[in-house]
Length: 125
Image 1 (cartoon, rainbow, N blue to C red):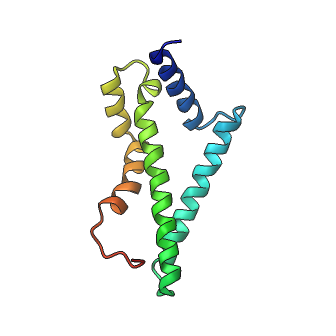
Image 2 (tube, rainbow, N blue to C red):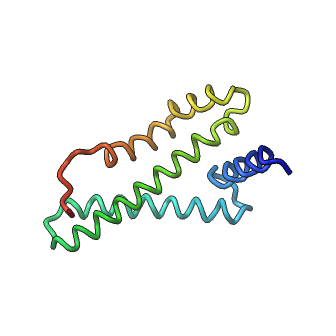
């Protein structure tokens, strides 16, 4: 099997896992629950960062926020990588653009950019 075919199969498998609704696919189901848990953990971490807690606790919460944001970033990059499998009638560049301006694409990037691009003083450093 050629490298191109292996990559294509990998992209298809990743696409199948990250798309919602693959209830017969254990990997897809685990990914869905993992992503929901990641969202809830991120929300809790952001909420806790609004309190004046012990600096060590704040540092730990900040690390949790960073980890959950990295998970969001990886999810977003995987969705960009497989966008042409979602928008099958479009060319790859057009499919990526369609994903980026879709509701899901905008929500994903809005959950990532504030944390990554923020120049605020981080309370846990």
